[in-house]
Length: 396
Image (tube, rainbow, N blue to C red):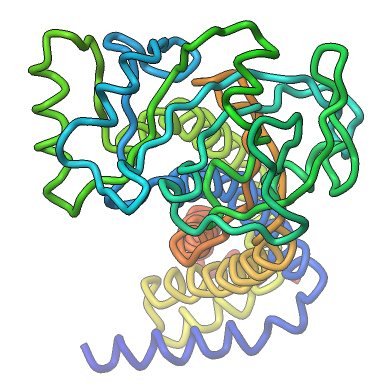
């Protein structure tokens, strides 16, 4: 066993030391694997970014109430009386002004994207004065909050960065009116940063909604408040509503988009990975060819075929590891934190997010690179070990 271990170490060291002699082909394989990893991590970081945006939108003590049977705000509808009864339910946090609950409207306006100039569906939300209190991390970072009853809007930082006409001091056209942008806000990176906010009563008049809403967002009274709140609403015969924790609501919204992007990213990675495998195979077959006499000499001196196989596979894995690490670094530099927008299939409106290249994705990329290296090195290694010694020694 000891002799076998010494053989493996000796042959592997010799193989790795000879890498500079095959610098061109080795670098080609390494860069090919790096490209595969960078693309895979980059695409999957979109799904991670969307999921993180949804997660940041949901505080531990927040809930949303929709009409029973509705899965999204677009499908929901609540009367003014419904929202009043909801706001009076137990389990809601209260302050000096009353219940911390915000009955809201949700509509869509078309605005051009900065990057392409094409129109996108941007969420326009009518909110109450309590809306900032039911969303964690809300703060005005430029300008001021809109005044109640006026045609003024405030814009999420994500929307302002991705869509034209949403900078401070500009205006958006709603119907025949121009609504000035008087403030830019942040909301801890959540979904609200993709939206434009206006006073709910102003939006009701503009869209002739009367005294109707689509959802009620509430701040719960502690972690146990939801059960009390839900039981009160579902047992009230005057109401036909569906209370949900906002975490569950946004998790359900993100599932379709997350699965779509993850599936697409995996498919792209597999297709590109096949190309990288062939590149690694070509590199390692070339390496084995150039070392045919050397390998035959080692075997003639008493080295078994096992160490030869391990040395070739190890060389391939080293190249794959270096390529995977390079691709991971490139993906992190190029994509992490990059701001973009995509379609939220649940509401058919745009959602802004930041690419999230996290440690889990980087590890997945490196592991995928090692898998490419293993496959790319295994078959050339077996071929090297099976060559007849006498024939190999006659190779030039």
